[in-house]
Length: 222
Image (tube, rainbow, N blue to C red; front, side):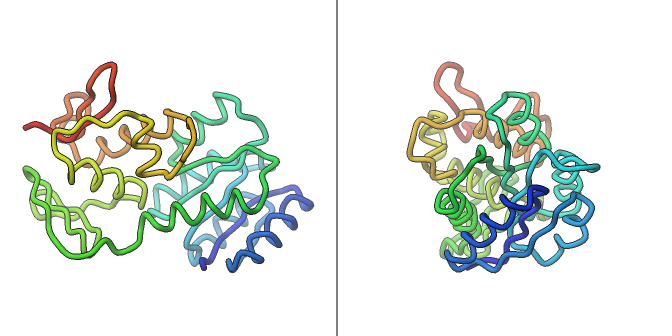
């Protein structure tokens, strides 16, 4: 299914998740430290990254990976602590799961993220200075390409395909992150924040991805 890099210092967890993901059809490479993870990340289609690592933390690894590319990242945390969750999302993670996690749950998250990069069919959307090509899933502004992660791409395409329609955070969680439960709205808020930083002229006064206070987000109006 996918080439996954699992960065986890606990050998028992590393072996269990690696074996479980392999049973679901994934090719899994592993690393026990952040430095080793960075060295092996180049060929991975997705990185599953523990926060608590010896030496270089998962936050540092995540920021480094995000600075050098758009590879999807799922953070592993032993606690659903706000600081861990927010820190991982702000570092650039696409999603997170709380340990202990069953391989089938992690597999579901992995597959959901990978679907965000799947071809969406032909057609080009022109929205202001933005051009969204749904065939190649590429975005440009003033004819200059914008590098987006799969999550950011899917969020932008979903909003832009329904201009001026207001979506709640829960609706976006279901449509973009494929969370079919009352999920964590911080995933949406952080995703919007990162998307605005890339597509808006002034992220503090967004033109494209606008906030509707008390409800959620919409694309436009201009």
